[in-house]
Length: 70
Image 1 (cartoon, rainbow, N blue to C red):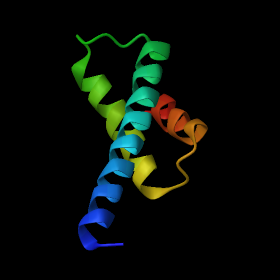
Image 2 (tube, rainbow, N blue to C red):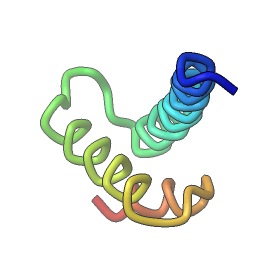
Image 3 (cartoon, rainbow, N blue to C red):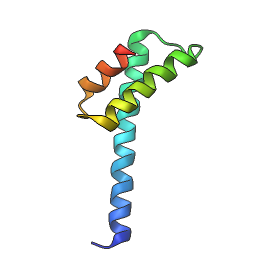
Image 4 (cartoon, rainbow, N blue to C red):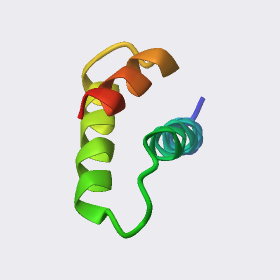
């Protein structure tokens, strides 16, 4: 596989992962009842979930747990 093909594949996987993470983040916002008016709280929840995604197992339950703990 060429380097450009590997990069394209990696970018596609990153996009899929980001979409999955975005869905989990939005679900936690909805569960917590966080409207767009609550930007600081939403930012804290999102950052905690993204940090959990970077550091550990990427299972949806782990991500949701991190968001609910924020």
